[in-house]
Image 1: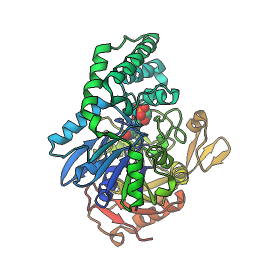
Image 2 (image 1 turned 180 degrees about the horizontal axis):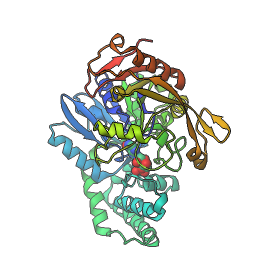
Image 3 (image 1 turned 45 degrees about the horizontal axis):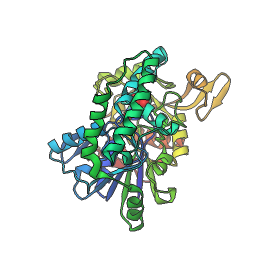
Length: 424
Ligand code: IMP
């Protein structure tokens, strides 16, 4: 069984817990897009780990972890992450961590360009993670990128790197920024390349062979579907296809190789960075922040919060082909008197059931809400569907109807045991 797990909103849905649960039965765990802009908090064997690039299967012995061709890899960041994991006792070798030779390389100059481009946008900035993700994917599409395969021969690597640093410095100068130091940039990549070289391989036949021989493959999505470069709130998006299709183009596994697609959503909505957020709501933000919830895991910054957006989730379920939703953070709504779900958008006198393409239209949309009674009860100790309060069960059922995809499981707390399977 090959399963794909995708964040259905703007990221930070709590995929880590769902993935942790599914990793147990996986033989291979695969990342197929994004880079170190992702931050996955995973609790395994009672310990907390924060992963950025390395698939979470690394925390288990006997699993092969693959960073696919669609990922952008910052060699120095990956070396740092490997050292951090080793420091926590995690075993990492070329046998259990494979890096695609076709994956593009994030260079120090990409980080500098990311920051410079954001600064140039002023008030219109995207709010990127400044990890150099956008400029690296831009190089890929401009056909001037450096790939992991280029790391195999140091002399060749030095040549292609030097050439790219020269042109990047011209770009930085145009943006009014100081040039990058050539020697520092070269050293950063070349040193990390020496460490990563044994891990670099052609991962495409490895994965396809695994699937043909009946191994279980878990594809671990990063970010969320509304940050997808094609389907998200463009231009306030990341630079990869975070949606289901990106899993195939980013791993070399064809669509027929995927058996099940799970969308992960929160019982409400959060977003970091700029961009439209129709159901954003100051009251629910105050309420969630007051509970100490929804502060960024790495930065501690408060996330933007709002009610569940059925328009976004309906759209997300459609273009991702979700078989079911795994809802997290239901207990976050335990104290609410009333709970709202957005069922449609009003754009002038038009009613929309999926989001518009134009960002200026999206920003003008007003939510149409359906209001349901809250359950005003602690759900964190519930262990089965029957134990959930009746209003809570009604919310979950209605949620599935509005978005056109059933909720298959629901999380009522951070622990593994605090997950309830919902009978069909
Ligand atoms: P970039 O991916 O760094 O280019 O940032 C583009 C947008 O995606 C910004 O709004 C970021 O905040 C958002 N973003 C990128 N990675 C994540 C993530 O892992 N979780 C949530 N938001 C993210």
